[in-house]
Image (cartoon, rainbow, N blue to C red):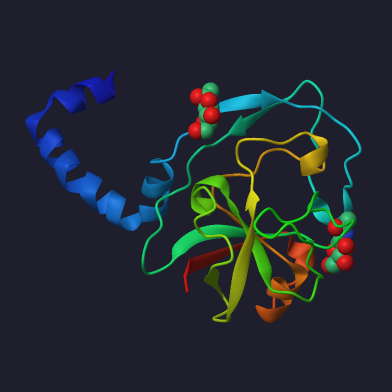
Amino acid sequence: MASTATAGHPYALLALAAIVPIALATFPHRALLQTCQPNGSIPGKSGSCNPENGSECCKDGRRYTTFACSPPVTAGGTRATLTLNSFADNGDGGGAASCTGTFFDDDKKVVALSTGWFNRRSRCKKSIVIRARNGRSVTAIVVDECDSLHGCDDEHNFEPPCANNIVDGSPAVWKALGLNTDDGEVPITWSDA
Ligand SMILES: *[C@@H]1O[C@H](CO)[C@@H](O)[C@H](O)[C@H]1NC(C)=O
Ligand SMILES: *[C@@H]1O[C@H](CO)[C@@H](O)[C@H](O)[C@H]1NC(C)=O
């Protein structure tokens, strides 16, 4: 009731007009994320999921959100979540990297990007710079897609689809940034090199 009365007051509208731009400037990350909405969901399916290194395994009966987009890429650095992936044969990355058709040992600085940022292979074999909050940065090569549309199958180690804001880095990327792989997920920013 109180909110209805307040919203009807002309000064309340003026206050809103002033507050909304301030809120958008203060929380740009939240505003950007809202520009990329889910495009559907897939049913969970458990299987021969290797749960090593903190991999989440799909559960039967659950549904998992899919995304065809990622938040907009910003020139000064795009906020993302760094996750850990082995691109080695028998690692948790599933099949060979889709950009090269090959595997990469854990001492190679390579990443997979969420589907929207992978942008239909346009960043394949391109370098990106990843910056951690500790001030360290590393250059890594994009070799695969962190698939935000598909998952819960053998090709994806029976893991759910990726979130839309993932930079999935090899152990060498985490090491170069001085990060602890036990943390599993770390906020970073990245930009095209
Ligand atoms: C989600 O996006 C993909 C790729 O653009 C498309 O093939 C698929 O049909 C979309 N799914 C839904 C439910 O819109
Ligand atoms: C777990 O991570 C280590 C490196 O941190 C890697 O050598 C190993 O292959 C990974 N295991 C799986 C199943 O990916």
